[in-house]
Image (cartoon, rainbow, N blue to C red):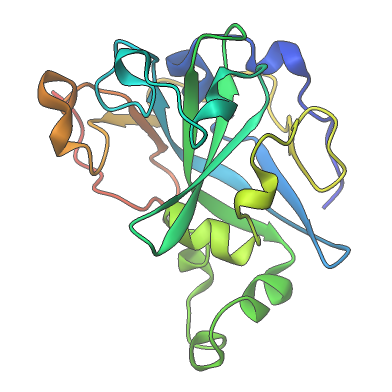
Length: 212
């Protein structure tokens, strides 16, 4: 597997819904103890900014936790949730306008042995490959993504970046669209069709039921 060109600032400088679609089929790369580990992005969620009640920046909220969302397009926003796991997001749009895309799942394509070393010993051999990065918490665990990556510029970092494997967005027929997962608190925003996934991948973390 050869490297592809790194995504530049212009790739991320778009609205969250468009970026969420654009990221499907691209490669998330992380160096773990000097070893390249990576996966193809197969599931994303868009968070649109201050008017989106599911966003951490809803109603203009700005705190030390979500400050990265107000940065340049291509900035990593990593947060810790439920006292259990981290979630990895990519900031998009204009600086100061807090929109981001959550990366929910990957198809593993390099460094599987390094990923397995990040798991508890009892699960290292028994976890199916498709489950290693199936869900935002799992992918952060096996790619060693934590708050140390918060604010990292993914367009220039030498520890984590996005590679542009595809120059065209996946076809409409291949992209599944549904409501986001775990945002029942977001009132009328909880059913907005802002989750996108590759229907051809078995690593998708949530339901494949499509929005009508």
